Image (cartoon, rainbow, N blue to C red):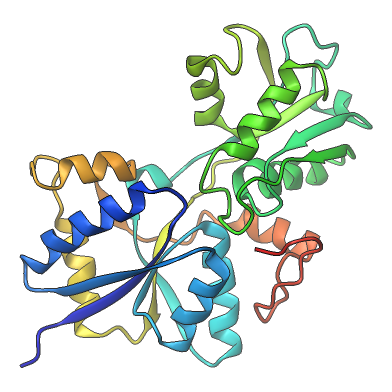
Length: 281
């Protein structure tokens, strides 16, 4: 019988991506899976290649997951979330103001200037702005388009939004809650210098997307990922770089808020075409 194989796509949002997946490749090949990966400069081509069958799996952002779903359905096939990191589940975004701001509650932001991340950032743009819209709060937006095409897999835009807040250039800034803490620790935000005036409902982030029906290689890939142990000295530093302690079964119950924001803004069409204004990865 031929050796089960998998070709996975990953977006090169940071040099560490090469280190991570080269390490995982050695570990996976040592357990009977002929695994390799290809790197993409943005998620849109990765999604298209997955649906077209040019790769077997895609390490997808939440936005890329939604597009893969839509594009697959339009092409007469289906995809599913094979696995996700433990740290991809139940995240929230926050809307932050300076501690001395007169803004005390979400409705006080009406008509104010709010800084966000890149146009395609789920956590720093689409989800928090969608939350504001659902709450009936209309704001002016200052966008920081850093790393467009990477779907927020960096903190450049969020950090610039935080800096604009501290400089008094905007009235509020949107960011994922973990980065709010990180920006204080690194000094971008001052301790006790900000207040959270809104927090979104929990949502999920990245997942390993695969086409259905799954090959024997993809099935083995999922089994091996779920079997990785943080106690394994070979993979522990790779798991640390990738920001997880354990792989979990993929789930798709945490994408409703992002799907609502995508539909409200017309970011993707129902058949998976890229239709967002000013979005050119």
